[in-house]
Every structure is written in structure tokens, then in C-alpha cells.
Image (cartoon, rainbow, N blue to C red; front, top):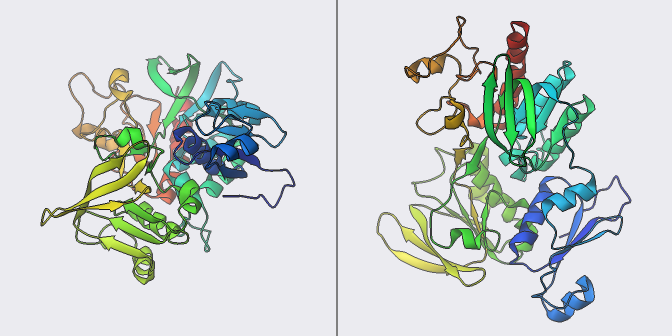
Length: 423
């Protein structure tokens, strides 16, 4: 798999390793979603490992090997080591910020662009890579202004560049673990001990893909089982069978993208069909593709293999009939679980599914010990904690669309200004 940036003559990053390596997958996924040109060199024999990667063999603990454009060689590197060499890892430059944004998906990036462009000292904190779930999408075709579509990684990179142009700081590979609320200030603590003081905050942490909940699922992650659309893996599936589990737009886009490479793509859904959960333009393309087959009333009930996924068991949820099929490519697009594990300790109200409740919806979720503390009503996107707003998929009753998330991010900054003006 080679990706070449036409605007640079720089040699792309080279990554050498084995197909079943979880670390190699994590690096591929990070580079792809970060829009970093790279070349994946798959090693299939000890001789290849010695010749190309300059290691002892396929079982050498120095694999995978990453060679950066300047010639720097990293053996079995962490993602942090890579972004440090790329110059992307940095510490906060300020002791206090007007606005801190948690999460770098479309909602968070939008809030960063509007916050920084309107003069707020803005920092965005992202635990992995900018783009969120949208960044894993091969092509977004119903986003305003892009009639030919745009990849999630490209859209995220454009938004990141735009936010940085206006002066927003972006802290990658940082995860919030705790929050304290003081008079007129919010204090966030990151997993590495970093302390962020802010006058207002936007939570745009989005959702993470649901798991199947099957034995060996975690063991096979990155070694045959993948969450999301798997854009970095598509070109590795040439002449292979791919199974995509899920009946939403992300699953539909993934199936269409894989059909450009795979021998056959099977969409596994529990219901009668795609009509209720997938946009009509995607349904039309899926139906017209000879490489895509939709398996209705079907669930994955078993994962089989040794060090890597080798086969899965499919069960019909009407007849209970089971069959085992060979595959090393299972992609799960099962909807999301909100990233709000910190909310209870911080005293922020969530709904039954753990989404953050905001604005007028707070009335129906308030408890005697969690009442709105101010005389004014909460702003529309404001959580139960004054000055902390929520935008995008993490918010109760939000519309799960990229354009909606971008709109909420921009809207949240409007309410941040109102909040700060009254402080």
C-alpha cells in the first residue's frame, strides 16, 4: 500500500512488519487517518525481514520498523515516539485558556476553528488522532460543499490546519481522566498528569464503536478484527473475502470502499434490510455492486483462529442455522457508546445511555442533588455544569451526522461567548 502526496517530493514514511501485528495495524491506522504519506512493506519470510527491515527474522522483537522521511529508524515504536519525531507532540503553552475542547472529531475541530478565529485562547485535546469516527470514513458524499465527496482524513486535516492557522493549540495522544469545577474556572487533569485550567469547556468526545462481546475479540483486534471502516486496510484485502458488520451509513461506505479491492464483501446485519438505517444513495450503489452481498437476519457469534483471525461463525437469528466461513477481515461498524466515563465523578448529568444531557432537556434528568445551580436557564448546549458545553455525537438527542456535529461545534462557541461575558 503506497500513498504519495503529490505536493511534496519528500520520500514517504516506510513501515515494515507482518500482517497480523497489532502494533503495525495501529501505526498504519494512525498514519492513514493523520493523512501522512506512507508505504507499507509486508514481510512474509525471515529472508525478507533480514533483507528489507534489517532484523533477525519475522519473530524479531524489533518489528515493526518505521523509517521516517529524514532517515530516522524507529524499531517497535510507540505512536508517541512517531509523533514526537514528526514534531506533533507538544505541551500546553499556557497556564490558562479561555476555551478547552476535549475531542478532535468534527464537532471539536469546528469549535477550535470558531473559538480561535474569534479571539479565544483555545486548546484542543485529543486522545488519539484528529477526525474522530468521521476520520475513518473513506468518503463523505453528503457533506455540503463537496459534490464529489471528501475522505474523512482529508476533511479532518483541512480542519486541523484551519484551527492551527487561527492559533488553536492541538494536544495529541492526551486523554482527560478527571475534572474539577471551581468558581469561574474548570480544571481538567490528563492521564499523563498535565493540568489544564480553562474558563469554559466543550466536550466533543464523541462515541467509540460497540464491541461484539465475543471471546477472543480483544485478542484478534488489529489481527483480523477491526473497528470502523478500516480505510488503512482496504488495499491489503485484494482478492480476499471481507465481512462488514453493521447496517448504518459507515458500514455502507466501508462496504463500497472494500469492493474496490476485495473479491467479495458481505454486509452482516441483524434486521430485514438496509432501508431504515442507510441513506438511499448508498443503498442504490450497494444493490448495483456485484461484489457486495447483504446477509440479513445474521449475526457473528464466534471468532476462530490462533494468532490471527482465520474464520467466523455466522448465525441466522430466525432459523438459528449456523455456518463457518473463512476470513481474515472482519470490520465492525456497530454504532457507538459515548465517551463519558468521567461524567459521574465530575457530577455531570447523563441520560440512560450515558450521553451528556444539555439545555432544556436537563429538566427531565435533574435529581435533588443535581439541580441547575444558577438563576438563568442553561444555554442550549450547556451541560449540568455551567460553562461546560457538549457538541456532536456525545450529546443527548444529537443528530449523528458530520454536518450536524460541525454545526454544534460552532454553536457551542457562541454560547461560550455568552457564558464568558456574564462571568
